[in-house]
Image (cartoon, rainbow, N blue to C red):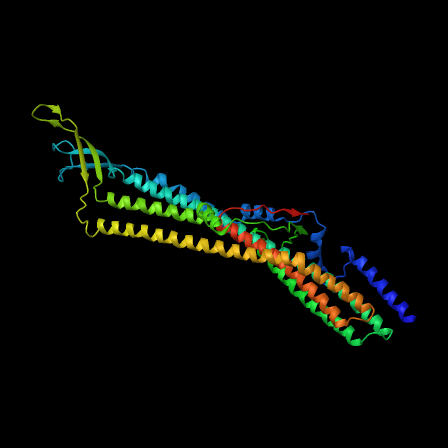
Length: 453
């Protein structure tokens, strides 16, 4: 009779402890107070950092992205410069002065002159230079978009890592509380002579293991907070609180060939490389135009300051007009070589585009495969393994209360459930990270993340 009363008391105590545990405010804390505040406050604060907000902050404030934008702006200033005529030259000189007197009146050809000259490249050269620079500027603008894609991808990966660590810490904390209840049950049974001391020691060992896991998770979270803050251009020690819940339903994606086609059309890396090919082609055109001469036209006006003794009149001023051009006669060592160089550059850029396309397709396929794998794993854990493991724990607990289940099996079943719950969140966040990599690979947003405060 005493044993029956004691068993009822133990079972009633466990039920009450489970009800108390359902409230987040009653979860026992094993973390240092400061670390616990950093982790648990996210459940109550209103300023939780959503993924969309993190992306927006990074795009607005990240210095690496700002640097690429400034680079593109600098490239955009080049085409008007190279497409303009060279600056004209103005010339002043004094000529034909007698060296014995330096008189301006004695010699007929003594004069002061002012001249103006302008270099004129062969028709088409300036346009070719401007077009090549314009294509380079377009390439730089695509590089900005590519940098933005990679930044958003990295923010996604870091944000989801942090979300996973928060969920893992919640699970560890919950399991620590459950193991405490197991310890109390084992101690009670041991007190009344119905349990073993080794059961108590076993539960304490498992609790210590979870303490070690907690310490490692807290350290990993601090590191991830530093990484995410760096991407957001904030002090690395700034606290970050995430929403407690996210949309757990994972999307169905287009087929692999469809994603490859989207990548070809949307990926800024490939568009940037395409503009580099166009720029290289324009430089081939320019190299071909270098077989033709450039021109230089000039005019000169000379004033004379003496009287013509034959007529008694002032000598008239003198005007000159001339044109000159270079002679491209060393074509075998200059123009031919330059043309061959630019043609080789075109081939190089084409191969670079082919290589980049293959890399993008590989990145797309890898990310898709990772997403499908982790999505299916998350679904299996959520709908199959975790419910079954949870039922096993309930059954083991009920059996242990009536001495039909070994305590070791009870603890192992709870540890197994803990592992599966952790693996579920690892799979879910892994799927989200693979989706972020996939979106960066194809250059297009596939789904919009929905978070729940």
